[in-house]
Length: 356
Image 1 (spheres, rainbow, N blue to C red):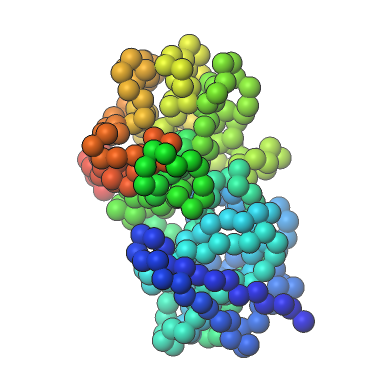
Image 2 (image 1 turned 90 degrees about the vertical axis):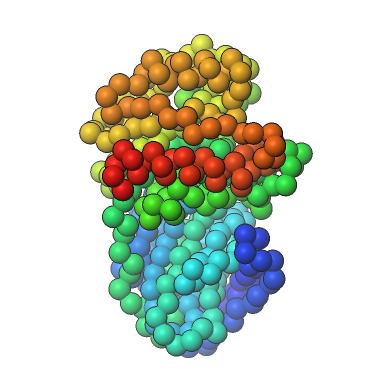
């Protein structure tokens, strides 16, 4: 007999902080022997389905959405570590912590018996661990046709700013934790919601295109290497770029290359990186974003390097920078106020350029 482990949900701090609990009805026992087929869901992001019956994923913002008619819905997940998720049911948001191991999770219960839409979104970064869908959604009613993909698509490639590092933190004095980080409140995630666009967020805190934070010379894998992966830390999981064809690409890389105030190898590395992205996504506009965390000479140097690369469909975009009066997220990262301001500027630019 399958053991059902009920997850405890807590309303997201964006909305409220009152705990709620769900109970999976006995009639909704998960048929995990059949595994995940994906027939009744819409996946947004990169999912590794090399193993039958499993869809593994790591990138922040990866989501699974489905529709059902009934009063409750659940799904079985397997995870290598505790991972923070957001559950949205008919637009109402709740937080879900998926625990290490394999278990069944109630996503919603006690609803009116009518059509509902559910979205489960990973908030944690790739280095936090791998999570996998190991069953299709189960309901006490019936699954409906999955939600249609959005007509607009955006690929954003970035670092901690794009991943939403510390965006929910209350000051610069807190350090990294999953509890204060979410791509949904980062500039790209907010902009995608405003534009009704599907987004692939390929972001890794501390990473650069030439060198990463704390490195004198390049040591660890760069964003150029990791952006080619389905799973952010599995170099056997090559991503097929034809599986997602964005209408626009935003590249927000450079903060960590310039961690010492200068970056001798940045221009050449970024130029090569942009060339590779153009090869994968020809005729797509590419926006090179000036870092909102860089200031003074470092910011000017990065912008000069980007301007030297920009040509044709490749543009430099300056969405603004952190203003001390707006406060900070953890470790001096952009907070909700700054990220929203950056998002509004990005939305304005994309609407103007793409006539959205």
